[in-house]
Image 1 (cartoon, one colour):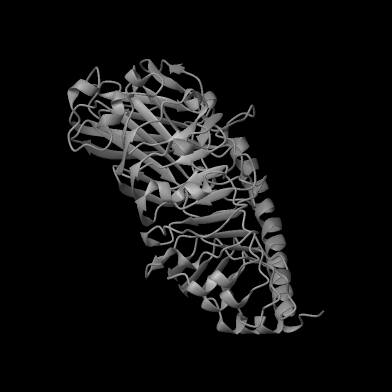
Image 2 (tube, rainbow, N blue to C red):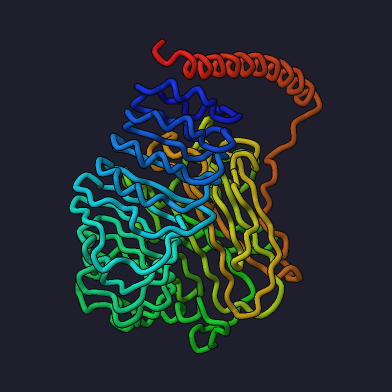
Length: 496
């Protein structure tokens, strides 16, 4: 039964126990809340269970470990608390296991089953702690492994059994030791970023020109990297004080056209938005030495090659600068922008957005942090802008004291996953501008209307709007009643 994307609310009724023959149950992307009912335990014929992007809370349902016929389990983007039951190791038929965004008690890695079936394993932000086992789970057909944002430790070489995967994300953990040469291969997208105890040299391998490798936030020596002389800015990203020898000039402004080519606006004074069209692959970063900024990215969809840039030729309404909003950089997991060499003082940060990919009923949600402080949770571009392909800007005041400004946009497991295509989710940004509030050209390019409607147009618009609202209200009311009737009928009469 597919009940996804139906705006269902309330709690899951206990009558789900009547659905003992159910094999597929997808109720993702709704507004369901409360605990996952214990009455669900008889659903042992389930093969596919999707329950992400709801408000379900409480302890992680232990009885799911009894659903041994499961081949596809996806639980993330909710309010569940760990730990993940060790009994999950009984789920040996799983092909896809995707868990994430758990609070509460920590888990250990021993819930992962030995399985020749498992090909996709995503455990992002699951509160997994401790040493990665010296004898890790046997997963010979694994193609995608995501362990990001946990507290796993141990030598990085412990992950070598999974080097044949296409994607291996181990960033934001506590792994240590040298980067094994076996990991450095063009066929593997590798993320080891933000593991400060990983060190040593990049392997002296000519194929590193084709690598999809992100090692920002590690202690790896970059002297063997291609164009290593351009990587000195990386020394500033995680230092309390950035040494002036690592950058050329002290700056007081910055602008970038995310995912687009250099763009210059001359009203009221010239503002140059830098080119940002370097493809970072499934994990990578780019250092712009001349303009003193870094962009970093990790993330890919397990089921589909994911675009890193999006663009549209359609007109962006509500602005006289449509080109700035017609391109964007995007990620399935996380984007970082670092501006290096800023003089100490107060700055205005402006972020530019327009949703140019996902239309209703789809929804893109992500979080925004500036200087490691959360400023937006579940940010919805379309909602903020008042529609699809319309611009909206966020302005935030910040004080820079260590020469570096950090902007972090990251997916939190929420929003739709597959509208209009598989992998349409995660952060998206059109442009960024940073400037001194007291500077002469301190007015950021606004998302201002192209023209104002006449009074007659306004009156006609009001009449048309009222009529449209009446029709829409009738349709929505009918749809909600029908969907609720179907839900009640389903749980009370499962064989109907």
